[in-house]
Image 1: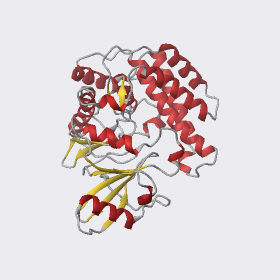
Image 2: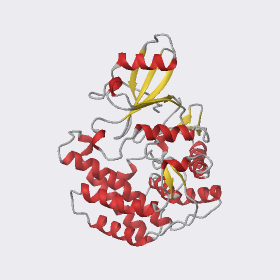
Image 3: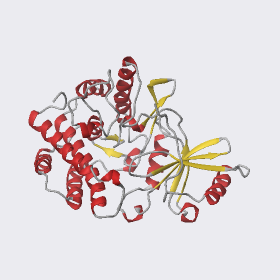
Image 4: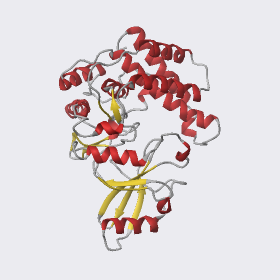
Length: 354
C-alpha cells in the first residue's frame, strides 16, 4: 500500500529552489537551512509539494500554470484563509504557516503549511485492510464529515468565506452553464439530468454549514498504525458555506458499490469488504447530525452531475488541444457513465443497491 509519498517534480511544474529557500529561512527565522523539494501525486487541480527544510517537513500549495486565466479558480489566498479559520475550530485541518503573493519567489501566489504525515488511500491501488478496520474507517469518514457540518459558522467566522443565501440555486445554474461551455458530445442522459435538476431543486430549510466540497477517501490522512482513524483532511480549495446536503451528496458520489459503473468505480478507492454502502452512510450521517437528509436522491444525482462536468471540462481541454495528456482521452466515457448513474438514481428513486 502506498503512503503519502512525494516523488520527483513533474516536468513543467518546477519551483525555483534558491528563492524559496531564502524566503522560508527568513520567514521561519532559521539559519540558512538547505531546502529539498518533492511533489505529491494528485489529481488535476492545485499542485502540492513536500518541502524538506533541514529537519522540518512542510507542504506548499500553488496553482497550476495558466490558472491566472481561470475566473475565481485556484485562489491561494482564499484557501489559506479557509484553513486559518479552520485551524481555530477543527483539529484535523493542516496548520498554516505563511501565504505569499510575491510572484518573484516562485512565479505564482502560494501558501505553506505543516505536513500531516500518514497514509492516504488512492484509486487503482491494492489496499490490504481487514474487514473490521475498513468498517471503522468508513464510519469515521462519514462521522468526520458530520463533525465539520456541525461547526458553528457564525461563531467561528467561517461565514466570511461564502454566501449561503441562494447557494443551491447558484450551484445548479452555474454547473449547468459550465457544462454548456465545455460541451463536446450530444449525451441524452445529460439532457435528462440537467432538466430534472433544474426542475426539482428545493431550498434546504436547515441552517447553512461549512462545506468541504471534495470530501472523499483520498482527501483524508490516516494514522499509519491504525488505518481506521482519520488524523487529517486535505484539499480545501473548494470549501465554502451553504447547503450541507450538497456536501454530503458529494461524499455519497465518491462511495462506490459493486453494481456501479466500473469506470466510475475506477475513479475511487477500491471497494473493500466492510466499507459502508451509501444507504448505510446516510444512517450514520443522520444519526451524527441529529437530522434527516431531505430530497436525498436529488443531492446524490447532483453530485454525480457535478463530477461529470468537472471531467467534461478536462476532456474539453484535451479535445481542443490545450493539453496533450493522454490520461484525459477516455474521460468522455466516464462523463457518460456519471449521468447514466444519476439518471438511474432518479428513475429508481434510490441511491444504493441499483
